[in-house]
Length: 151
Image 1 (tube, rainbow, N blue to C red):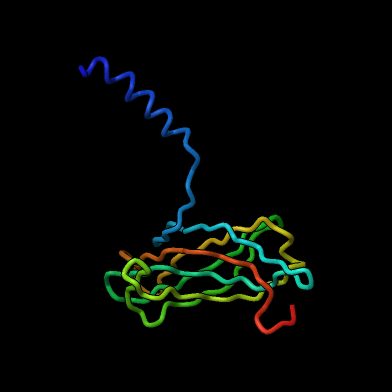
Image 2: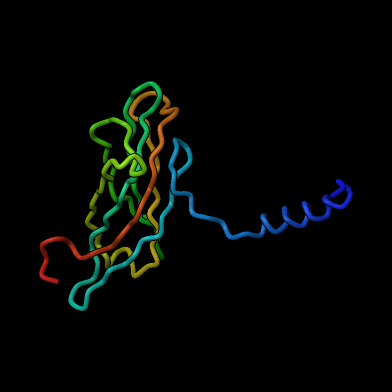
């Protein structure tokens, strides 16, 4: 196929690519947060009041200095910071390499945050240094009844 004939096809494909729905950004870098929709698991007796966030991969900063994960719940009533945990041990891991994921749980006041839908935003905050090279992958996010409650 000649270049003259291929150009209209390439132009049409580029327009279609621009119209494709945006995918959620699941890998956080310093200055670029990751987002994931939260699955709400209400039971007949209890509203979900506990957020469980899964981090499926992590790479520390190139200089070895620690970075903190900052989680926020974004919903119909605004944004609520959930917590600022750190990965421990401060070493790279990945589910692709068959390393276990790390999970973090946070209690929320469901009456204060509303009924959803919810998104969790994860940002990387360098504790010291610039955090260059650090990354973390955000996996599944669930709102559940708190563990140990009779729900």
